View: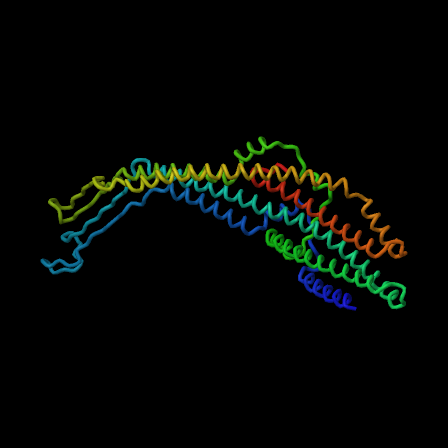
Length: 418
């Protein structure tokens, strides 16, 4: 009765894990999942805060430097022996100073802040696409795994019935014990396959729950027609054009080049001295009483003309250009290989779809009935049983691979083509 003990243990473990889900699972289709994802994902919400922060820095860059105001007092007058002698016969000074940024420094800072805000928006779009890739991949994985788990459960129930009836026949001497051992082996093998699949199912559920910020079990509402939507005849040149225009990583490095150029321009502008203008009042300390004066000041660029930062900015610009070319080459190679893999997957899917039809289910039912009637041997039955399960597993793999390969092209091109 080992197989019964194994079944009980597996059932209890499965029940414990399933009980961790809420009583009512959430059934969603792909549009509903997308809506929940955009509304609730914490990483997206954090990224939107970064966009707002960068926009606030544009406002900050537009602000002028504050003026500086200073007052001077006599703490102690030794001639008149007075503390804080600041009256009409005492002494006090006042000065106000304003820094004027010359050479377009403020405008350069504003332009850099705007570019950083654009980078934050592109990073948000990049994050959306990466998380959406994981979302769709896990949704279809969960959907296929759920179907396979249901099939495995039905097959385990069938094997349970066969084991019970065959155990009785072995005891009566109508069947050899080796046939019963073969059935038990098939049961344990299928049960182990189910346990491994269930583990993968839980991992995919965990990723989905994190992405969608849900705690309930997620049931993906889909049909086989949904897979057909991922089959489109789009050539590699068209995909390459879309990638060059929309790929977030390329757009980010393009903006990095712009930012590097703006930074270099800013460093050159920093070599231009700024001007400070001032107005002051001196009650007694100057040549004249109650003197009101004005003045200007600026640094003389004799030694420090910001040469080091300008040189560093030049190299940073070159670095960003090389990084862009390197990434562009890498992504073009990835796109070419991913497209080849996608076309192969489409071919596999179309072949598998033709091979798998209602005859599979009818043949399985016929084999079950014939085995119960002893019209087929245990070896024939188990060979078919194993081949049938292999076919189901392979079909599920091809379906999820079709979705993943199409979504990979969406990710690489930066556009929802499939």
